[in-house]
Amino acid sequence: MEEDDVTIREQNFHSQVREYIICFLLFAVLYIVSYCIITRYKRKSDDQEDEDAIVNRISLYLCTFTLAVSGGAVLLLPFSIISNEILLSFPKNYYIQWLNGSLIHGLWNLVSLFSNLCLFVLMPFAYFFLESEGFAGSKKGIKARVLETFVMLFLLGLLILGIVWVASALIDNDAASMESLYDLWDFYLPYLYSCISLMGGLLLLMCTPVGLSRMFTVMGQLLVKPTILVDLDEQIYCIQLQEEAMVRRLNGTTSNSYFHGNAQHLYKELDNIRSQRNKLKRRKKASAWEKNLLYPIVMLILLAGTAISVLLVVLNIVYLLVDETALPKGSTERNIGNASLSTFGVAQAVVEIILMIYLMVSSVVGFYSLRIFQELTPRKDDTTMTTIIGCCVSILVLSSALPVMSRTLGITRFDLLGDFGRFNWLGNFYIVLSYNLLFAVVTTLCLVRKFTSAVREELLKALGLDKLNLSNCTTDAESGKHAANGHQKTL
Image (cartoon, rainbow, N blue to C red):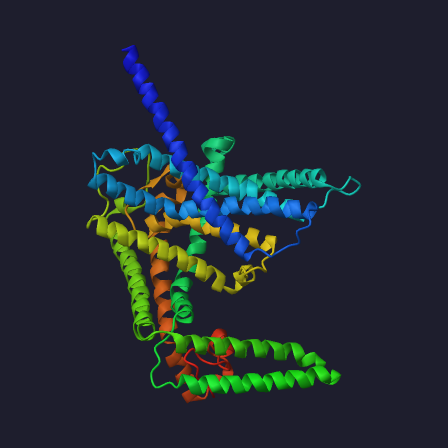
């Protein structure tokens, strides 16, 4: 008996060490990728080693950690789904025994813990540390800035705890809930994270439909559109003539001090002309299959992905109306690989993973397309650390709500694990049903508005109402520029 107990303890020890190593390697890969992404957009600073450089470096490391946690939250549900299908396909394979329920649950718990840590501690610390200068009268330095940062964090923590305590007392005013609020670790932090998750779900509900319609425009800008009855050589020649005329105007402007104020505006026009020339040259150099085949295929893929997403949401609404057990729920069982949650097996699991990643990319595109958050749009080699902190917090909120949104919309039937399944609002039938209805309706309206914009513009012009600015601002702003096929729009 003693030898059996020792053997069991050794197996548990080795399995825990193996899980820690796997989690560390996965996080290391995410951290390296996140560091490369942030340094690509971060504003280049001087090599001088001073106090501000040290503060910026610490904030950079914290932002990199947060972005890595966001990547882990995005890949959490796809990794769990594909692991379940692999264990079903190869149940007794020796080389995949490390892929078990304990590892999956550990990953969910770690992502939940690190998400709370980044959202409530690391990112506020990075922002306050970056903006701090030390208290008045104290000696300047890193220690003074750290002291001010911790004081600000303490005051912010008291403010947030007080707000959540009052909100919970107003919503659920009974003795049991009031006493449970004094339990900081087991109830208070999960309740606070549940509120943040609900806010993230609402933010996804606002950004994802906009991003799904915006993805067609973004891919249209990245790809080369088909050229039908278009003379690219003539357009390039006209663009070169415009560029030469603009250069002559700039030379005359710099020599004449009276028109010196318009030089900056002329330089912007010159940059636009040169970018249009580069686009036309790229279209000319593109191969035939890239011009005539790649663009339609990508557009069809985007349209199919959007249509399948809306169809799954509509089916989930029907399931919710017929059977209340379709509500999203959490699971505490560690049995992974016992049953497939996909009707068509691995094929459906792959489609679900692609749709979840597509929804996440669309939500990020939609987030930066909204006017409220356009100032947070990162620019290559010209993004301040404050903007990077805002971007990391926003992406963390979106990515943390992605598993909940995917399960709420019925994109997947995989139960939420860890603290993700403990959110209070997941069991509310009316909230879940309203969320599904709003997503389906808003996405459909955004797509209809996107594909009928050209028809609406022509109708407004035919009725003589185009001067009333009834169309969207983005279309009007681009009306004076060259179109994607090189032609210039005229009234």
